[in-house]
Length: 171
Image 1 (cartoon, rainbow, N blue to C red):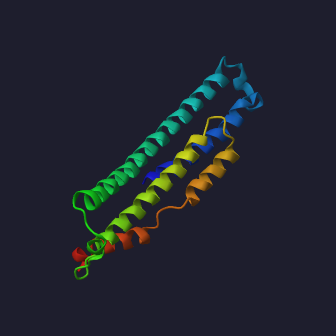
Image 2 (image 1 turned 45 degrees about the horizontal axis):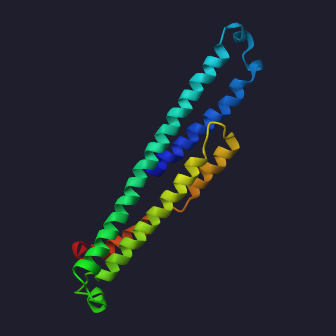
Image 3 (image 1 turned 180 degrees about the vertical axis):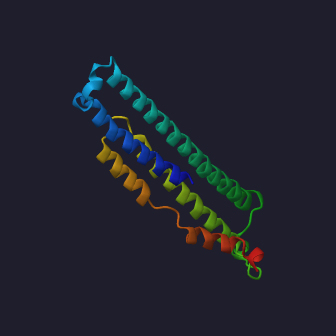
């Protein structure tokens, strides 16, 4: 959902950028050139629309940041509990009872999910921070393509990690 919001924001901002070029050229107004401040007002409204799009994209990015930070906190707390508070030894971390995953498997899966979310957030944050109202439509299109092609966390990889962690509930 958050990735869709970011991509949609890029599409909208690209359209606004294209309109800036057209709206900035006085020859495109014909008889409307006679209307006082028409061109400036139209450009102002377009600028406001673009700013709202940027705000929406930043809000989606903040939400994604919260998810990434939440996963990092869960991982940190879990590692502290396993390694610090409960003081498991290496053998206990590898102990497996039936089909249940080992503690090490769970920690590894959680580490993988956390790392993937951190990397995805860093990429999205970098791309969105490059976007300005002065960005050309070709620059926006290139950034949008990066956002679309960015390494999304594959659902099957996430699912396989959850399958390991929740193996007892699946059976």
